[in-house]
Amino acid sequence: MTELRGPVRIVGTGLIGTSIGLALTRLGVVVELVDANPDYALMAERIGAGSRLVQIEPQLVVVAVPPDHVGEVVAEQLERTDAIVTDAASVKSKPLTDASRLTKDLSRYVGSHPMAGSERSGPLAARADLFDGATWAITPHETSSADAVALVRRLAEACGARTVELPVEDHDLAVARVSHLPQLMSSLAAGTLVDAPSSHLQLSGQGVRDVTRIAAGDPGLWTQIVSANSSALTGLLEQIRDELDRVLVALGKGESGDELTAVLARGVSGAVRVPGKHGTPHIDLVSVLVTIPDRPGQLARLFADAAESGANVEDLRIDHSPGRPAGEVELDVKPGSVDQLVEVLTERGWVVHR
Image (tube, rainbow, N blue to C red; front, side):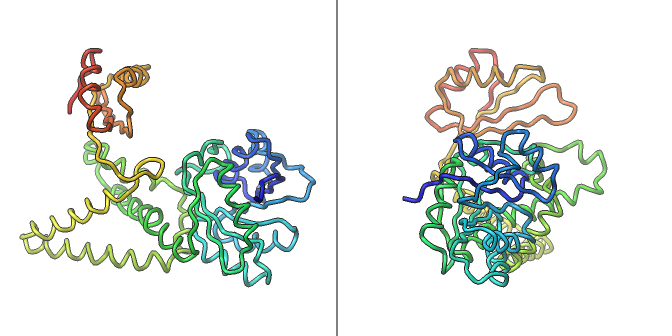
């Protein structure tokens, strides 16, 4: 079995690269930090993600630079070292194509993509547990060696992730569906708010926050990601356009009931296919709404009381609209836990709605 011994060289100390460094150093793996921005590398070093001064030949190189430069850096590391090389880019076809133009032997290269992140960026947003329970895609190409694939799998597992192996093209279509298209849809929805009167925004609730949260991502970075995956995204966007045309025609006729219901019902069918936590199959949950005063310590008290009921909170959302002295926490639990949760919370003075 191929073991991850280290050292591991991480090229690019943003959110993903620094988080990988933090995850590995907590296991005692020697990590070398490299970044074109010396301030980023210094910050990553100071928070414990590794060292800028490692002089030992790496066993593994992880390329975590912006998408436009991945192929170039992969090829450079293959030429300069004898290490196995992987990358963490969210698109796999372009880095492979770019690297193949710059170096002949790609047997030590295996693409990979940890499916974790945040709308925040930079080393100070990094966390050692960022990948715990996350999915990490491994995308070998035709000449990837078995040892290279095995070592990249060990990397993902060491960071706490579960691995899924996919062909390069399948990966890019998959992330277009579950990541890049949602990012574009969120940005488009958020863009309609730019010129909205403040009186409209005062009506904002949790729904608009849910839809627009990821629109806060770095536009420059997302431009590179979306452009690099344009082929897979184009087909999905054309599908969305056709559905929008269908809705517009129905609304224009003033007889939108059946058409609109069909579009919304298709959305429900898609939503229930999204896996639950830890990749488990989707399960139907029941929402319990709890009114929570806007005072320090109330959320902690609510969680403690919910734990006393024996109910496992599978998911939660917090709605605290502007101007309200209280918020509302939506606790999602399995149907068999609802009655006991409601009973305990009510006994302890919470205002609960089912």
